[in-house]
Structure formats: C-alpha cells, structure tokens
Length: 583
Image (cartoon, rainbow, N blue to C red; front, side, top):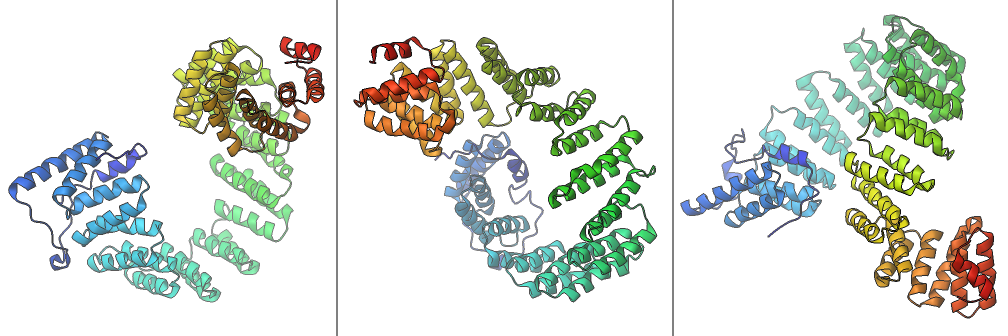
C-alpha cells in the first residue's frame, strides 16, 4: 500500500528520528498492569518485524517517505500493538493533515504504552489542536501523577483547565505549582489573566503586585504593573508605578515607551514628544534601542490615526547623531511614504540601498514607489541594479521582464524570464508557475506556438489554478481553433473563480463562439462589456460585433465593429468587416 506524502515537512522527521525503538527511549516502564496486552511474536516474526522496522527508520532518515510508510504498515500487520509503529504512523497522518487517523494511532500508542511521556505529549498536542479539551485535561492529569518532578506538566494542566473554562481549577493548579517554584513571573501573569477573566480585578492586581514586592528595585516589574493598570484605564495607579521605576532608572527604555503610552492616554502629545526627544538626544542610549523605541512609537501613532509628521524632527536629530546608520534611512523612508512624500522616501531608500546593496528590501521599497506611478524606466533601472547584487532573487527578474514585455521588447523579456527561471531561487510554486506563464505568453507573441503551449502546460502542472495562464492558454487555443473542449473547460474555471472579470468573460464567450454556441457566447461577452465600464477594449467590441453578426443582428454588428475601430482596432480583418459588412 502506498501513500502520497509530498507535503511532509522535513523538520518534523528530524524530530521524529528520536521516536525509535523502545531501547532508544530513556523512559522507565511504569504500571505494567495498566498496559493493554501486547502481541507476543515468535522468533521468525520478530526477525521480520525488526527488518521492516529498521528499514523504515532508514528510509525515513533518507527522506524516502513513501517507502518508510509502506514498511511501517508491514510492521503494523505483524504487530498491531507496537506503540513505536503506531506513533510513527500517527505522525505521518498528522503531517498529511488526516488528523482523525493520526489521533487514533496516537491513542492506540498510548493505550499500549501509557507511561510513555513523549507519546502522551504528542497525543495531548493533537487533542488540543482538535479542541478535545477534556482529553487534554485527562492526559496532563495522568502525566502529572506519573512524572511529579516535571513541574511544567502542572503549568500545562492549568492551561488545559483554563482552555476548558474551568478557571478556578486552573488557579488552584497554579497555586499548587507556586508552592514548589516560589513566586514566578509566568505563574503570576497567568493568575492575573485568569482572575481578570473572572472579573475579580482586585485579586488580579493583588497577584501582580506580589512580583513587585519580591523585586522592589527591579524597574521591569514596576513598569509591568503600571502597564497593566494603564490597560485597565487606572491612570493614577499606573503613574505611581512609573514614577517608582523612574526613581530607579529614568533612562530605562521600556519606561520611556510606557510614559509615551501614558501621555497618549491622557492626550498630552507634547509630553509624549518630550519623552521621546529626551531618549533620542540621550548620548548614553544605544542607537538600536532608540530605533526600537521610535519604531514602536510609530506603530502607536499609526494605530491611533495621529499625524505622522510629528516624528520628523526626532529623525532629524537622530541623523545628526548617527549620520552613517542606514537603518535610519530605511525607517524614515517608510515614514515619509506614509506621509505621501514619495520623493523624500525614494531618496532615503536609495541611501539605504547604496549602503546595503545585497539587501533586497531597499530595492523593493523603491519599486513600491515606482510601480504605482507606472514609471517603466525607473522600474527597469531599479530591477537591473538589484540583479547585479542579487541574481538569486526571482522578483527582480519578474519586474524587469514585465517592463520589457509592456514595452513590446518581447525577445529581451523572454530572455530575462528564462534566465530568472534558471538562476533564481523560487520562493514558492505559485511564482514558478507565473514565470512559465510569462514565457508562454512571450513565445506566443513571437510565433513559437508549440513552445508557448508547452510552457502553459508546465505552469498548470505546478499550479492548476493559475487563472491568467488558464485564460491565455484557452484564448490562444480558440484562436488556433484547436482543443476547443479543453479551452472551454479551462476558461470556465476562470469565470467561476472571478465571475465579474471582463477579460475572463470575454475569453469564455469567444471560446463558446468558436464552438458555435453563439447565443450563449453573446450573453458572456455582453457581461464582459457590462463589467468593463469605461475600460472597454477594441478586441472585446470586435468580438461582440462578430457574435451579433452570427445571431443575425447585422446592423448592431456594424456598430460594434466601428466602435472597435474608434477604440484603436486597426487589423486588416476588422477593416474588411467594416467595409463589406460581413465576416
């Protein structure tokens, strides 16, 4: 029996290499009487089992996953009670996203080896993912009893109770854990969260204050408590804790941002600016810390819809202090872009790119400005420069090829796309499919029709839902009057996916026309015209005229052919139709 496992993530199998024969697992066997009865194999069967089992492990290590799963299935046929085999098969099914099968295999593995910590944890993880809350509680409860020294299990059990809505049980478990660990930040924060969910605010803040009482000179905890009070809109209490932190370390970076948040809540923009300016002008504070503060402040401004220009003066001060820090240029360029200062943004992105020629981000930000402007020469310039330093980056071949395509430099565009396909690292199959699609379009324009169709086939093999390829392939097949059933099927996929796309509607209508379904073709092309609005193309108008002629509406056909001429159509065929009034 063979299973397709092409989607399996490799890193999972690296982890699962540790899930081997029981001799490899450092797990003491507990509670033998609770285990389900295992099959006792005779020597010959045990020899076969071992042969298949270690063969499966070896195949998995070599990433021969189909072979590995077949061999594990052979093992299962010989011994359906072997927990190692059951958990291996469960892991395979989990990666294949057949969670139901995976869950059953993990459950069976735990049934035959109930004290195995790792098998239980794998079952708990999948059960949690599937929302089986009581099962998760039961697993962690059992494990906590088997492994009392593993305190993390009690934390997991508390979270399981909380997920199931049993908040008081979660708190009780955390209280019990706290007796063993002492006051702990993670425990305190979880208890704060749970009491808050129970609307017991005073008990929640009582918990969080404990961490300050234990660490009275640690500003981080004072700020934490202040932030929580501020989130609860208790500004006065928040300020008290911020002031205590300020007395210990007035330049503590987190305190500065918390004070900025506080002034934002109290609508004191000048004080917020002063706080940040103090940080920016502080020579003892590292530039990386200043950038972190500034970046987080920018996020606050953007989220609250405030004027982004108020940070410009802060950037100017930073540039004076750190004139060679190009990261400043990147951040400020993004800020200027938000302010719609495209010229200023482009200047700062260029500075960043010159300092960091092997970072694609600088070129991408420049393209972000040039693309909406349809500045083809600028796009060409940026992409060409990028490829000098980053020949492995697919996006720059695509942008450069697309510009040459738009400028009707078809041979150069084809060369660029083919070079990109050979040299670039494709970030995902969708991009690779698009490259093949562009190569197909270009070959068709250049008269290499069979090459074009082969490229379309490859594009669709990689991504069967590539709508532009489905559209263009079906349209060009209709122009060649070949494989019309295939063309109709492909074009139908595009119309179903995007039912108001005028290009796809026109293509589908034209394929129907070539099949002789004129009335149906007319309805689709009329919809294409309806959704084109003011962007009607000469080609669609001409198609509509041809369809009207076939449906006997010859005067209307002539009107559409003339409209196609007005829209820029100038083919000999169109001119002949207008002259003769016939197809």
